[in-house]
Image 1 (cartoon, one colour):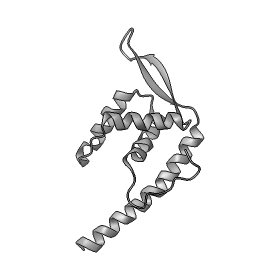
Image 2 (cartoon, rainbow, N blue to C red):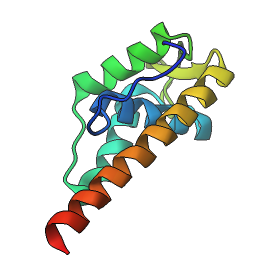
Image 3 (cartoon, rainbow, N blue to C red):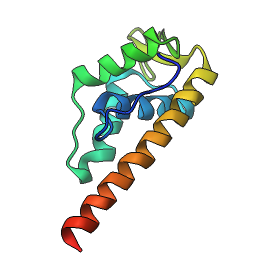
Length: 122
């Protein structure tokens, strides 16, 4: 992960959006990949957004590669033998920094969308 996230000039990329939610969800509780995907799909269903399996795992792998998260194998709740990979923080300060950068980017995107609505539907 670079020191400064460079905006694309348009709207936030899907992977950056997913990484933001994955960090927040990791802050709230330990979840494994498929559970993360289920939660995100349920959260965004009313908005017509259905993140796909491969993009979620690419985002998780980016966070691991960036030294923000790590994988930890644990027994799945309610099972005796089944193990799943959970995600935990390696460097929570990096995670908070990434979230701050994304907040600035989301504010910029919101302003761009609000301008488009004002200019074209007022």
